[in-house]
Image (cartoon, rainbow, N blue to C red; front, side, top):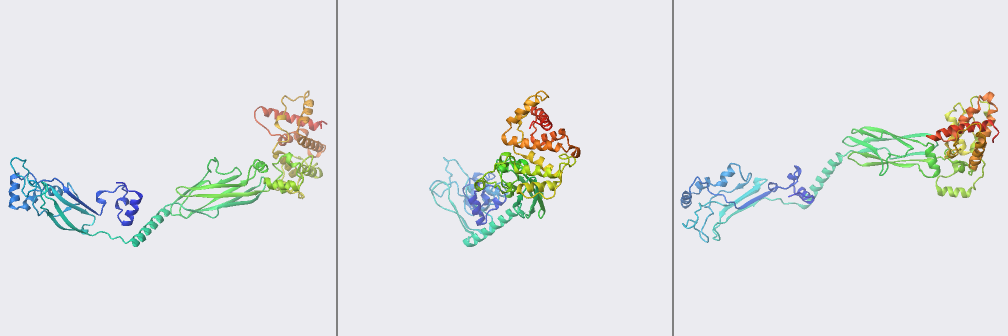
Length: 503
């Protein structure tokens, strides 16, 4: 029969689990401590003796001679049946076949003649032979059938289970098994499970790491896996390396986390549709999962915001909370401004006007990255700019316009026909009329500034064509397909506004 959980536990407690420990799923006859086999086994006296000879030897009491011809003894001697079983010495007369209700063997002429035999037997098997002693092996003289019953008495040494001691041993065995199981499972230790980047800034990169150590006794294979219903391992603003690996016992490895708040992420944060927190799952093969929390706080920037939002914020952008409820309270305490253009745009253009109109290759030579970051920080906090190069301020201006969540010139206003000298004037007039009011103000403001820049072309070496390309790079969002041709036509429109008094 099959071993169930309760049977296994009982076997453990009684100390008899050899069949389970060997991998068998069933308990066999020989798995018991003691087995007694008794009944009419139907073995006869071997036919090397005739029936008459058997009767003669029974009547003469020659039991020893008959025993030598007993079929069961012969088969057991040849190891054909009842391997491992024992039987007492047959010292009584054969138990079959008698005339019913008499002590006389069946030998009547009108009946089928049967040689007397020891059909009825008692055998036993013990895991420990010394635990069984047969006291007697007898034939009963009852006259109730054509058989004489056999009987045997034994002394048996059985286990005396001491309850408290058994429970103690059982508990120790379970602890040993648990310890073995635990040691066979991979284990790792993380020096931390929370990665807090603190305040994070627009387009700035930050990195941290955690240390992963194999503290188990076996090789640990790990892998970062996506959360349920997610395709990626983490949010787009997070990078992780490595994402999988193997550690031998005692070995350590560094897992590096990087974050970058690009323009796409900044837009989502400003819209309230993204948060700077994520949970990553580090999975051990044949082990447990570890959960790693990555978080940060966005230092809001005017970069990545919309013109619609920027013109109503009179306070520093950094002060505007990201959370909707806190933002609502902030706006109640600070009534919306009514600016024609964003104050940040005005500050940059004013700074270039004061310092940089004569600078050679203005808007064409890259600025210094550190200065551009500092300018952006001053715009977000309304702090003074301090010292800077004109090229850095121009790069910040172009980056600001490029980062707007909605391009200054919407794609639906791109020319739908080929721009030439005959249609550019009426088309440009209609373009200005269809620009949204805030976009119109900013567009006119920037074109007017660029036309002023061109007044110093002898020193800054700028041309209308060069500035038209700058406008195309930061005022529109280039698209593929047929719209790409329309965006090229838009460059002609920018050139027209830069070279005429159309605004």
